[in-house]
Image (cartoon, rainbow over all chains, first blue to last red; front, top):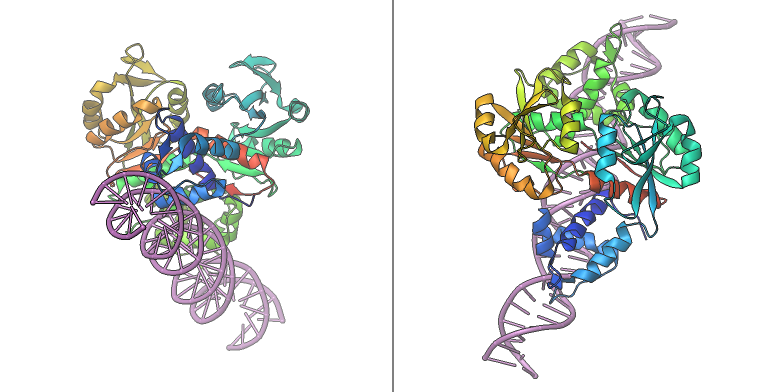
Length: 213
Length: 213
DNA sequence: GTAGCATTGTGAATTGTTTCACGGAGAAAA
DNA sequence: TTTTCTCCGTGAAACAATTCACAATGCTAC
């Protein structure tokens, strides 16, 4: 399977949500329906679905169950994929709560902190370790994804620890551009930047809308 | 001033952060320095800065103070710009805390809730109103930006209320594609999608990195 | 002064993404 | 059977974003 653009991967999750919410008695769905539910064009939907290797039929469109299964096989891990989060402050705790129990195959199994008052405790039902134990815990628990929700200045340090421990993907909430090897995927979520953008365009006449992950 | 791409606006905030953190004794800065701090190319930085109408000099690069002032004039509101947030649950409260006091000219001045147990109270130092009072409060307080942090199914309703009350920009944390008029700017932050993307690429060899707002 | 150097601003080229448009295919109706 | 739909898959076109490449500029050194 060749390289798939991150944007396409993101949109596949949108299609999956639509499919999940389609009533069971509705067996087929057209590209223009999927498009409308995600505010996209039918052509874009069809183009995206090409990566799955599953083809619809011209007359009925896509089989809901079959398409859903194909997206799940593509998007979701076959066996449990484990996640760790660094930083259990304001944002970190909200994320722990938000992601808990959301997907059976994707689970936050450990959190890390530099502050001794916070670690060695259970936070939102998740064991919190000292950041110094991160490498050991990550390897022992076979964690492949890391979330960074620490203060900006500590973000690069945490990223280095994560990468050193073998983590392959990072969801970064710190406002600091992370330096990682090219085979580690980083998705930045910059809340302050997002706010500045919205505030800027709210002051202009100008239109526009951006779907972001 | 003609239309500026959202991505450029986002990167200007990155440059601004770099400029803010440059020591006062350093009067000038080159595009390649700004680029390195944000993990971009010098050409991209120069291209982005073209929208400001401020030019550097070939010998010294950009004057730090001057460039910073120009970015501030472009990005930041001249007078206080007010923000409202709908939903003071898990994510909403974290956002209230995150944004409080972050920028003097951009302030969350009201929150809205559908749950009577939560409204008519002060939450994170911010008065929480019933969503039914939203239109009045938004107009009276001259609020131009709205944050949506309510359950997915209520997101469109809140968006309609916001738009009806004259809000011009929306930061949307709900996983629902909002239908708004084209002159209202929407920035979506889809945490679950971001997580799925990271998890997907963490399972592949494949590289990649995306800066997102 | 003038040669050499590093930098800027920007037209042109490139790369990446989205949309168009059409051949082909199944279904339904005549 | 044939005609007429509507829809899918995909090559090609259009569009958007990024990077290249180079003339112009001002500094420094000699």
